[in-house]
Amino acid sequence: QLQLTESGGGLVQSGGSLRLSCVASGLTLDYIDIGWFRQVPGKEREGVSCFSTGTDSTYYRDSVKGRFSMSLDTAKRTMYLQMDNLHPGDTATYYCTAGGHCTGRVLWGPNYWGKGTPVTVSS
Image (cartoon, rainbow, N blue to C red; front, side):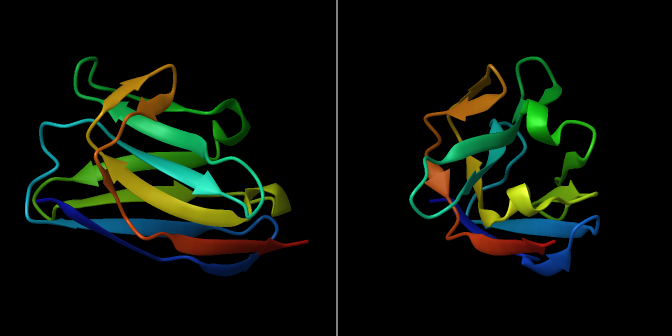
């Protein structure tokens, strides 16, 4: 069973940066699609980015493209989301996910979810 644990969220001013980490235990992340989601209370959850093992490519939603960067350190079993030039609109709880299928810039049907880490961007 794969377990995911996020960290790195917090409060940052607009224009600032944060790096989220997600450590995997139980299984490795080497051969499955992975991704990040975010959710604001009262709103639908939205995909932020995902990595496809099929295309060996990473995809981002338009609103974060050029500002966010997703990476994976297989040796550390850790995935990262580097977030730069943050806007107040990026305020949300961020979740790392694994399994499912990365297509259309979204990870569909992930089998595993972390518990989330909150990010607040002040103006």
